Amino acid sequence: MVKDEVIDLLTEYATNERLSRIVEDDEELRAARIHAEDKYTELAVTLMEEQKELLEALISADSEEVARMEFLTYQQGLKDMFSLIMSLMDKQEEQIP
Image 1 (cartoon, one colour):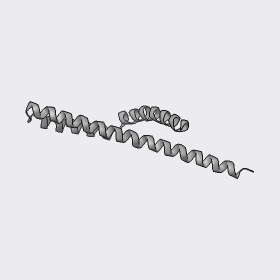
Image 2 (cartoon, one colour):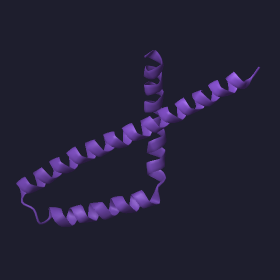
Image 3 (cartoon, helix red, strand yellow):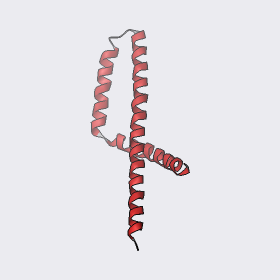
Image 4 (cartoon, one colour):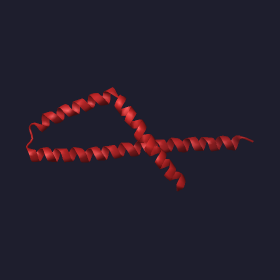
């Protein structure tokens, strides 16, 4: 279990650091964000205050879910890659006489 905890800590740090850099540099993501903000603004001006609050709550809840899913997906990919590397190293050691 200790090995898994160490992997969790390492992948969490790697996920946060690398993903932040990747996201900041992605032009398509930046364009999509601008497009989404424009659509939000168009919608928000047509809503009453209570509807705006509900929309904000929905967007927050959805964003939290998506962020968690992306984190878990990326973290699992790192764990899988680590396991693959360890497996290949074990196989290579088995072949050495």
